[in-house]
Length: 269
Length: 215
Figure 1 (cartoon, chains in turn purple, blue):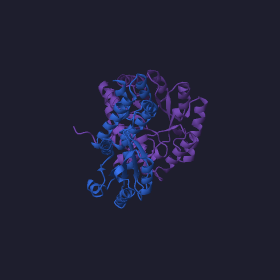
Figure 2: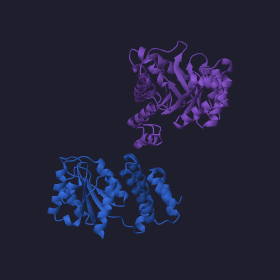
Figure 3: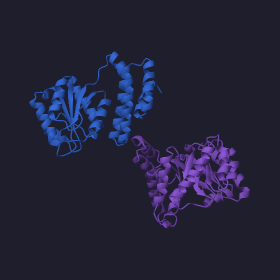
């Protein structure tokens, strides 16, 4: 599983305070903890006023890079901010994100065309989030035309089919999983990602829904996800699911995660 | 770390991909093939077996260690033969007739191989005649290991031993028995020479029995 660690995000109140107070230690700690928990990328999202977004991103990115070697997922709703922030990164990481909305693809794709940057792409367009599998797949098809145009190979793309709240869905996650399967069929090497916790908004005991969703999605092709890798229960569920799906030779990843204390009961102090 | 220690560590940690290369390097350094086998590999498997017995490692960790050892043995084999190193002995193993379970038997096979024995694995659902035929074809085999996983197939162990007696071969071998429902008391009752409760102990038992036979 490609883990995009979500904890450094200005929309989280404690992080917003750390940003406002320029509390470097707080950010550094979040980077180290997520990296130790096996994050493939450390997501960095400022969630501040546009006027100070780039400088805030730079401050955050510099701290993370000073603390860990894990590549950055540069996260902003504004593609121009992302383009400005990419040069701050020592390593090529992940762009989070583009979609077929506005000029996002046209702004980002030319910049990352001849690089190793990977890119999250949401299946929405100027009409919003399509409500049928057919329409989402049609947005996907448009996106892949653009990717091809700029020579961005499928294995550099993390397609987010967009996870919406379970509580207002009429068919559970069936539509989304059918989209995942179709994408996986069309492009075996592409990555399929999602923000795991979106599914459980407005329901009690959200973590159970999140876990069940993750397991079912992995069975349908999800191989990348945005979540908190310090969430031991979810991380354990992911390791277990990979083993069950035959993706973990001799269960050694699972055992390794247990041995290094990432999953299972916390060692007694 | 010496080359031998590197081999040993790679086997113990199940690093199948690097073991063959390390064994070759050890040979190139002029280390005696027998020492590579005995110290580097059998020694490492003994550590693995001990850890398994003490519940410090899980079954897959034992499996990958055995797999790593196999990779090393492949490189070592021609050198062992040309330098005349003898195996620890030959063992015939099988799950008795009527019983189709093979996981435990396979683990025992691996650990016994890990202890330096040559193992003739007859598989599962093995009729007494098959054991006898194999014993006749391999008069140098001194240990027969019988496995059963069900209380309903335990009598097949008894019957197999009886058949070996009737064939006049009982005195030519040591017989060891094992499997989930099998106990020391059962082993004593049916006149087996040894019982062990897990794969690591089975390897130790085989070594002990072999020492008695070849003494």
